[in-house]
Length: 290
Ligand SMILES: [Zn+2]
Image 1 (spheres, rainbow, N blue to C red):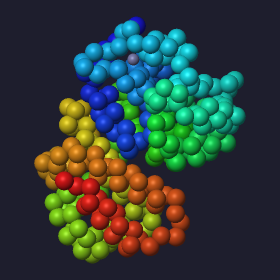
Image 2: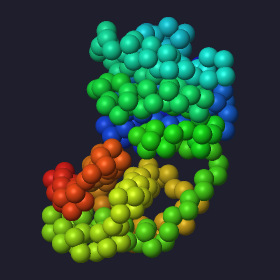
Image 3: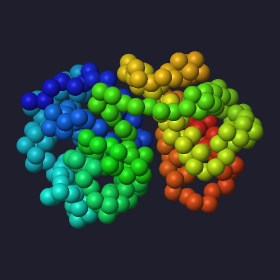
Image 4: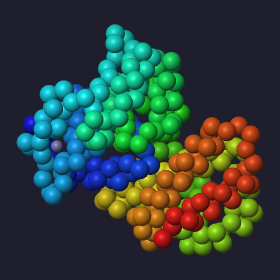
């Protein structure tokens, strides 16, 4: 039996980010204990009836098939022996290369994702880097540190563990909150600041990638705040709120989408004109703001 998760703010939050992330990484303490919740999340992505009109679909054909593990649009991958192998990922890609028969989204779940061997992880990376419309991944792990950083950076991270260490520099949070606020308020007019100041703080490619990672964290915290999800462990919440308290949810989500797209561009391209890159980023963000 599936519990009612429609009121779980985490799910509403994560579903709202569906246009940005085609893969979610659930970090949990116990996979079996969390699995029912995660399967409910998969149903929310796949089934058009699920949780619509304030009701879950108890007697929905698709959700019943999912419960019986016989629904063709849901694939579950588990370690085969000690590891998850490349062939398993390739088989998934092959299965999902055919469009969904009923037009619903297709979802794959990878249990114990940290057990992917390197060639499996690289195959999966290619798959999630160029997401097809309507295909979503749910990776589940008890050990996020054992997963390739490049995979983590392409997933929306949903941490269901109790403790979460956050070790950003206060200075970075201050700079980037201020910068984001300028961008939200002044749009294209914030370009000169970026030229003069942003690139003074972040001048190397690596430091700019890190700044985009931190912007993602800041925006994510603000979006979660809309769903009343707060992280008490986060030290710099006051700084973020002081700078960015009155930004609409739509603006936050649209900006986050651009941050993720541009961060991924940064990590993929070696020779990049940083000045031009930042120009395009700010103009692109400005265009999607209300
Ligand atoms: Zn259903």
